[in-house]
Length: 96
Image 1: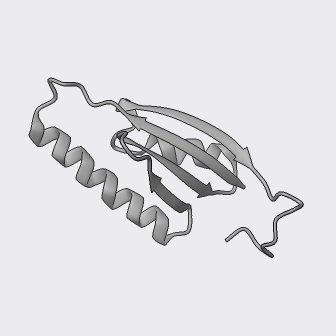
Image 2: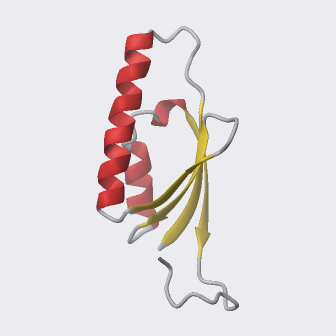
């Protein structure tokens, strides 16, 4: 199942810089691992925002939920999720 996910991060202004740096590093490590596993298929930054658009390829809504909940920055995110599927006019033979 494919999902389009928008994640917008809002860290508290009073968060200690060391904590923010550690959370960001942990987030990057997990994002890279999930991409290598094929679960986090695409990841794009939204210009001018601390936000991204992502495509996840998971087996279920529950799996997506579980992945999002384990993101280190999850407590500081606003997340929007849309299930997506192939458009009949797409010229591509697969969803890659």
